[in-house]
Structures are given as structure tokens and as C-alpha cells.
Length: 206
Image (cartoon, rainbow, N blue to C red):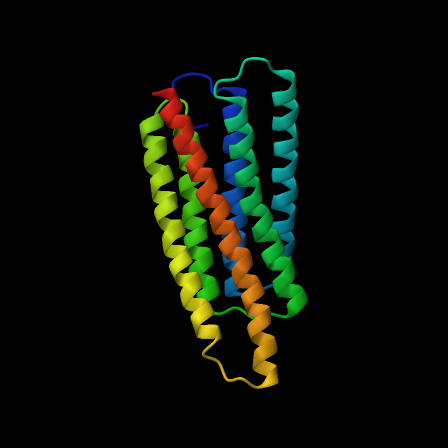
């Protein structure tokens, strides 16, 4: 719960905040992994993803049992889904890096760093939704700006891939890295979608 809150936070907001918190923690662990891969960090990402899934299951169960919700049911569901997707992509990124034997590089680190910052903005935006919607919207806009920066780095990374030598070993490496880059681009898209939902909620509250 936000330290700025003066009243009891609604159960749905609490659960969304918890999901967003797990997303930040997962991205922080992914950032550790792309700097220095280890089985321990990979396991930590997977465990966070499973904990976040459990929070989402509880949220959906609460949603199914509740007639009146603090914000539109569709928006609660959409925000929960998009936040969950971000962490899912973090987990599959680690899994595929391990399976494909992809080693860290500066592009991976830059992209994940931006995604981590964007996840933090989404988290702060969800925290502010109930009592400070305009501030929540500010955080959503910052998350969208970070997503745009991340996509720029993604395009730079893809361009760099195709500048590599064309022997067979490098072609295989290109295909592996492109797959990982796409995972991170998809994570950015879902973060952008979460920011859009926050913006929609704010508009409806005005």
C-alpha cells in the first residue's frame, strides 16, 4: 500500500499493486540475468512469475464474486492481464536464453534496463490510481516514453544483427538473438498496453 494513502485501499487495487510489484521484481532479476546469467537468478525469475500468477488467480476469483468494483471490471481484468504478460515475457526470455545458449550483450542489458524502469512506472501508476489519478497518468506516460526508447534500442539491435558476417555460425547466432530481442519487444508492447489501461481508467474517473 502506498505510504501516501489515507484510507483503506480497495481489495482489487491491492491485488493489482501486488501484481505490478512482482513485475518490477521480475524485471530486476531479469536485468541481473542479462548482466551475469546464473541458474539461481533464472530460478528466482520463474518463482516470481508463479507468485504473480497466483495473485492474478485470486484477483480473477474476487472479480467473479464481486458485483460492484471500484473501477470497470473490464479495466481491472485488462490491467491485470497486461501486467501479468510483462512478467511472463521476462520468464520466457530467461528460459530461451538458457535453451539457446545466448550470451548477454549490451543491447540486451539496455533493453531490459528500460523495461525495468517502465515496470517501475507502471507499479507507481497503479499505486496512485485510487487517490491520485492524475499522478497515476503521469507515471503511465513515463512508462510509454520508456517503451518508445526501448523500441528504438530494439531496432538498433536488429540492425546490428544484420551487419554481422554471413557465415553459417553467425547466421545461427543472429536467429537466436533475434528471438530474444522479439521477446523483449513483446514485453515492451504489453507494458505499453498496461499504461494505456491506466490512462483509460483515469479518463473514466475524471
